[in-house]
Image (cartoon, rainbow, N blue to C red; front, side):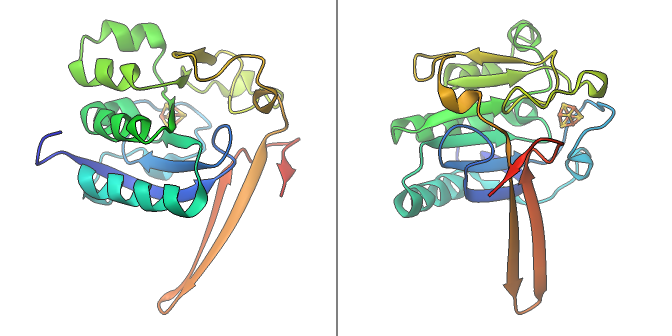
Length: 201
Ligand code: SF4
């Protein structure tokens, strides 16, 4: 890890059960070069400074979240995680060193990522256990494949940590609602898969 490595973070949820198997630390990055019609996170698309944080700080927050919640893994979403691949590879490596699994959601296909010839992307993939790849295609939206937005997207098992017969990968999608109230007001946040057929908990 370089001393200057940093992640332009859009949002962190320290513990969620709606963005991958089990309890997970979820980190959405700011900025995506793609513009899929119907993208559910349009506010995360511009490459603007949102909340740039040193990788070491992100890892410290991950450790604290793991201590508090006994996490199964982390999920990296966006925005486009591979647009910040080198820094996120350091986060992913640290997560795996803690025994956590790493799930990445990318708008690029695995083939496109491999063809990019980018060391950071290669390192991020090397530290990824589950990859959901491909553009979101709203004409092919699915409500029956958990953690997958449209039928063209593929869930890749890049390590032996998960198997395609894991029942958690075929259960109903879920949505989580959070309301934080502080001295400056309240913040309402929804994450997960807010589509017809989702189960709320
Ligand atoms: S790749 Fe993902 S974040 Fe980027 S525009 Fe498509 S759906 Fe939105």
